[in-house]
Image 1: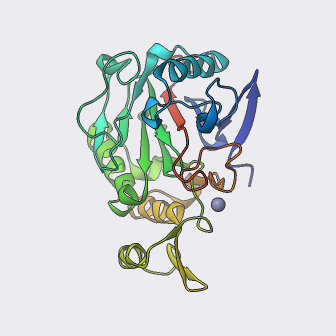
Image 2: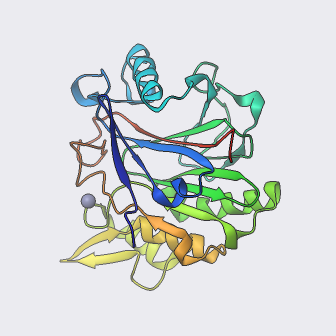
Length: 274
Ligand SMILES: [Zn+2]
């Protein structure tokens, strides 16, 4: 098996791509790191959302630096409106720039789907689980923000269902990448939450006990959800990178006790595919 995530360094900007997606030749995508931006303090350096409390000017400058390194026009981006809901929002050409240069969505949108080439979907993270979904047959994509609430509510499944409905996607064709997020060793939770997940995801691979403490393996919960939705196991790649274990490189809510910026997942269908 090859690597699940590749770290790139372009000028000062460091970012990840995922071979499962790159190898199709159908997408442009990236997952940001903290390296390469101009923000300071707990936001250093590449903070990509003003919702963290950083100045909008810094965030705008960071986004511009990030997009320049990748050769992308930031005007192509449409950003989520994340509220830890399980709401899936279809976006099209008319949404270009929303949440970046134009006002964002007022309704919940923790997952975005599109089949418009060139539109860049953007979602934000600091420990929650990012899920990239690609339908290589119908050329459609989904990008999912799955924290514990979204994972418990099976937002990944809702996104697969939305892609079936809107784009006639067959789940057996879908490719999925689970991007950097908090790992099962770092994600200690209350007994109450442990019990909730133990009931929703039985089998001890998601809700775990160690030394009298309680942990969740969110990536495994997302993977099980995707397989229940009809995805094939070889079509699911977990990047295997923890935001909290790697908090010098990645923003982590846990590692920073809530004082942090936000990473971004970006995902688009290439405009000129071969
Ligand atoms: Zn960890």
